[in-house]
Image (cartoon, rainbow, N blue to C red):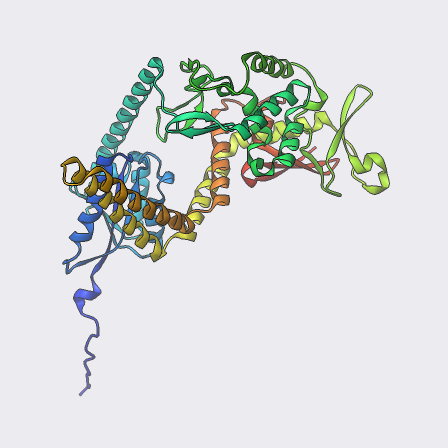
Length: 508
């Protein structure tokens, strides 16, 4: 007779099947009411799983003050999706579809991916569980409603902004170079203001954008990032320096995902005079604007878009412009001084322009296949790099607790149980702790270089989305918007270095 030995289980069936659950919370503004909602959601999920025999809470992912219409803007949401891909989560709980996403396309995309990973999502408000196969149609309907809600909110906000602009009531959230913010007002920064005056003076004395950029970056290293070619152009055309403010220079699209684009006459602009103290006189500013306009229509050698951007691959020297027999050439400075010092020969300017036109049109045609996947990959890489760290959740919880304490103090003060002096003392202490924790959190969740690259990739995508057709002639503005430099490999091939670190070779 066969002998059977029974090996007793070391893990109970109940433990073995305990679902690893995550909770996702989000509020869409930083107002006090919304913060209360944010903390209430967090506390709710912490308590909900305390006594559960079937489920265990592995993490709470909470985005605070971030829009739901663009999932790439929600760091915690991306961290949750990343953890799902790593097999850390079996089920997700969220308050409602509008908390999860206000973009139907993104909502369904994520639900389908999670289902393929064996992960279910439960939407409490709508009582929808993706474990039931019949719910996808319901998700489509509810996702559509959430999207309509977002569009409606967006329209209401735009309407309120329009009314404020018309009445001259605006909130200032950032200060251009030369100013600093003081209780929402622009105040002149005397040191920076002197540099602004110097920039206008150099420009009116015939020095071009690129040369001003080089001078300022060399002379004022502490502000180097403010003095790019585009930074100088922005300073010279910004009406803030004469004490005026123009609003709605950009606007947000009506379609999801929302994107901010330049207002080139599609909507009204609002000019409010004397909103703050001026740095530059109106006479000087108007002279600068006339000079800027005149240079758009003149072939000024010093203002060539290629100046300072063409670099020899052989010796690393910048190219200079030369005229010969009614043709414009660009030549390596070393080669021009002595041919034996560098073998790279000159390149005719028209061929450089033709190469850019071809590159532009290729990217315009294929940017959705090249740039959008790259943007997604960089975002995933960033979140994979910083996700899975227990410190992130611990710090986030501590910040939430401290914020809750500040709101408790506010309620006590409102009801008369706490005097003004004590309230200020305690809230100041709590704010200092929160700021310290937030700075610590940024070390785990941010990378300035990666953020800058992502921003530039998004700028490229925005640039090509605004183009409705390929170009047939060289466009200086288009070139300056996306090209950082050109490496001249030889007289037959160029390597274009675009913003965002992208490199493309193009034959001459």
